Length: 462
Image (cartoon, rainbow, N blue to C red; front, side, top):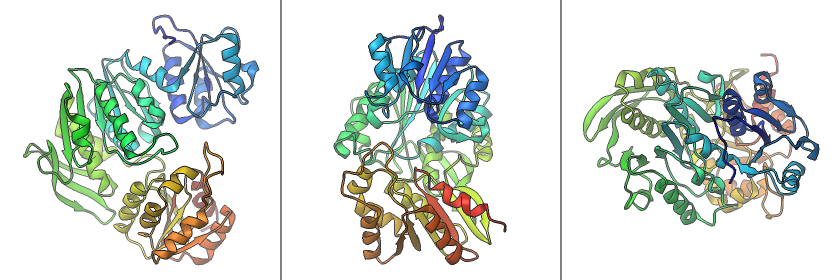
């Protein structure tokens, strides 16, 4: 495997440089003095920031972009061998690294690399931790899978002391990392286009936990059924947290919610109060995310006052129960939820917010996920009062699995929930204009481009 020498910066080319993770890594290398080039299909705010920082970006992926002066090419799991830049690099004998391999190499240059993993909650927990670490003056380098207003983007370049990042399990990418502290939030059935089943996913997380050195630390959700399997026989320090298991190291009690669903709770470490904390993001699930962030902060020696300062300043990331605006007294929220567990958490959060009717406008994400979890999707979406479905967002997949949004519609109707399907966003928008009433809550939901529905509605004069 090609190894980057950070004391001898070289020329790195990124295929798909505009991605949320790739752009952050490219920015860090620019800061380190590397020559950075890349390609993507269209310009974005992320690519504009890179260009301003000195990157050269082509907005077409062609073999001509792979020049002889490139030392290494970085690519993601979305890039196939038929990609012209990938093929050209192979033909020229230029070394190739996956995004995860590059990130793993970068982690080695930091004293405390921190990986936040889990099927759900990674972006929110990483962002909470970022606010706390910044409040504590730790000057962390940060890589997060969403746009975090605190750092005006998806990355921050700090000192060589602490590197805080999301660690994704898809294609086993997190097995290329070198963490000193790892968080495992939960393990659920997802990415079934890669993993065989839930047990396969759990084995992957076990291998991830085994990456920790003897003097490393694992912070893990004791409520997850795989907790004991993940932690058995590990030589590193193990810290557990739980919303439900009183035997965990970090627990919460005296939990209350304000009218917008924001929790206030007391955190305890092995029964001794750590402090009382108030969140500025809604939902019961965020109490668990906060406990994980509290455990990390305490492990780093930060005080309860610093932790609360971080929570006070954290109002969420883009596309996580994000308030978009109001249309004729109809509140429009957008959320990235694309798995049944996430959908349940988001809709239960919505139930705590004052409303007349909850409309969930859902865009399923990938055919394999929709087919594998069809009953679970129907059950989760039925929490809403009314559901509107868009077509499945294919992402990296082809429509060869014999599944459609109409199949999901049928399952939801069987459960007694009103559900409509429209093949275009325009039809969805027209229906909402005519049927959503004052006091209603409309949530656009999914990992694709469904956010455009709410944004288009909000363009109309109030």
